[in-house]
Length: 425
Length: 110
Image 1 (cartoon, each protein chain N blue to C red):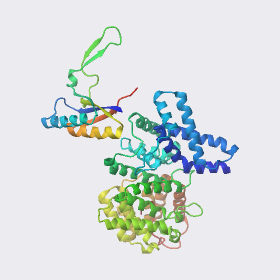
Image 2 (image 1 turned 90 degrees about the vertical axis):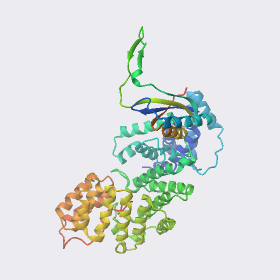
Image 3 (image 1 turned 45 degrees about the horizontal axis):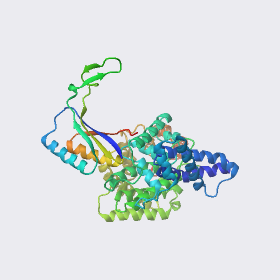
Image 4 (image 1 turned 135 degrees about the horizontal axis):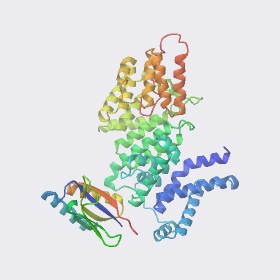
């Protein structure tokens, strides 16, 4: 990859959403905005290696995309499009409202409740995250053609049904924000534990984008506990990122991380948000409980200082809101620290999570700690087969291969097995 | 301003209660007062339908609905709304007033 290629890749990450969002506002058409943004980037790929990178790449891209849009509208020359052209040429002043970021407007449109949930996630990743259709398809284990159809269908509905490109009606805002938070959290997780064999294991741009957008939603709704909870959860997870990857690109589990490398600034901000929610006296939602669990972990400067009974109590609280097997799996990981691996294994076995890599990774670790190497190896093999993140595969492979080495004694006396997922352990 | 069709779904026709009829009247008055009203009506049972096919030569009339289904359209509104967010709120009001599910579809313009 040449220097210019790298610059283009970086500009794409940083500017894609802004170019699409600006065009979408001016055109009132998401589909055309996306297409013109893609064309502008294609032009950059042709021109920048020859002409050099322009001093303000973002502005260059927006201007180029806008010119392409005007050309296209003139060519097509339909009445409705003429109206849009007028909008482009005589840029109407924007009302200064609560939401003054085009990208957030874009998020609300992509997360509209009249769209299916899978379509909301896919659209947000495409339009806001700038991921390609193949990347999104891989992230959700869906055929590329199926993912492409899903996105096209959503865009067609936005246009035909007139899903507005803008701020929700005031009375709709709370419900709409809940939908946005779910999508932002999915994007954060995709950045935190990227799927795909040829990709960076962590995409800091996606986690940073999820955090930035969550901060914007919070600025708009400072009193909403779940917005604060999601932001705290993301910050406390992001704080561990510097310690989460070894120099050789292997995932480092929570118990093995160099806690001195954690980002103290992010932790302080996350803890302050969690304390603020506790002080409110309101019953916490799912994100606030997950944030509190992460606050307990980041409170301990040494893994041995972790207040596991507090973690288990918080998972009990979460299980009352969300009695899903994944919550029970994460709870069992904490139980292993409190009551031992045997008790935890009994709770993990039988959970309906056969297709989930973390289920097998957890079983593998618990079996290893119980000295049941043969079963542990089989569970590691299952976990490795289901893992789509390169760093996690490396971590699990090393753990499995350590089983093969002639052990000097019994099971190693180490702690939590989970490879530090955002929501747990 | 776009137009939307709000179809009321049910498995029986003409089964609205007096209370539902009263609520629908209140809803209709509000639609008219707010400028969203275009048209509305209740439909007789699908059994009363006639299929008409005049594509070739003399029209052919066939008794009965085009498709038999458990649920069918028992009534409809056509409304004016600037965008889907407003239309969704109106459809929610419609569903509440007639106490039935409503399918909301945009009417093609131009």
